[in-house]
Image (tube, rainbow, N blue to C red; front, side, top):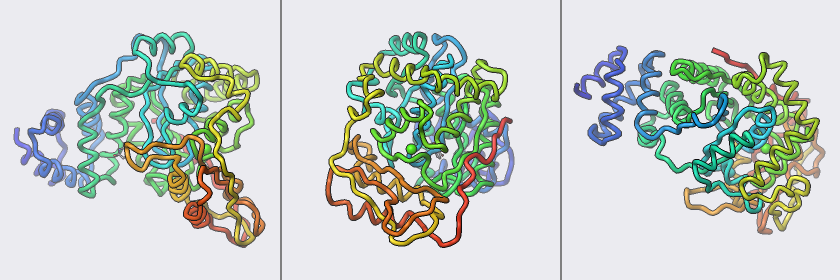
Length: 434
Ligand code: URA
Ligand code: CA
């Protein structure tokens, strides 16, 4: 087989075979196929697209390029949730204990975040003593006992994706639905879940800005997941403003604690209930999403969701008393209000800009080696649709430095305030089951 023939075939709009796709991914991973040929193929795929069969073959080939996590020692259906990324997205912190409390095993392998705020592990490390350096045996034992554990990523998952994503970034081929869908799904599949719930964000703060594109991406991922034998569904949710009110590591832990008690922001609470109900159904703990939702509301009300969170934190060395007394979480020295310049209705909050503001404070990593400040971040006091008076606070900055001029400027730039009344945006646009 020759790479040049594969490029030509795709360039001319024909379907590649499983053998051809395997040849390309294996050859690229072993560095037997040069980057210029892979670039050409990526561009051909960008223009010609890929059939459903090709997408499944590509995803499987990427999964096989590296290690795969084996969760078979964990009892029950393991269901994973994946979000295509947003700002202040506290859903994982809430969902993990929430669904574990109704018996869904949550075996989370996680990495550290790059960008706006930390990843799930960084956020959890805001809890004094909590750590993810546990052995695989401990991890399996903890999930079997408590239904929930989080371990740091140590294996070499999907090396072909790392190379290909890096190459796409510099060859203007990131924005291709088959390439994005196979990239994301390969990582989820290699992580060993039996079933996957996808939270595909749409709006100015999302990877996919338009609803049509978001739906297309969601359908592509659901079709790949089901095509490789992992039950997959997707929810399309709003990212035209940050989710919830907190953006920042310790602040988001506090927000998750509130939400597990039913006292969290409405949008975060509703999205968690929707995603969680689908996870419960896929794990076969309920027959309908209606029944699942009721189970989740019950564990919020009777305190089991919060108890599960405490047990989980303590089992990995964390000080679980932060749950009852969140003042024990890292706290920033200064609280500075960003005030509205004029009165009106909040029309838009550019989530990306809020994310950058949080990163400038030190809540996120600019590079892989940056050290993050777990205490700092932002609390949004106004969301889209709210009325604000001139001089009223839009956002409270939690900072360890008094000089927040740049941060405040970003925040003011992110908010647009208009005279006409504005409706709060739709939170969940669509659910895609197949
Ligand atoms: N995120 C990924 O993991 N892969 C892509 O291709 C795009 C976004
Ligand atoms: Ca949040």
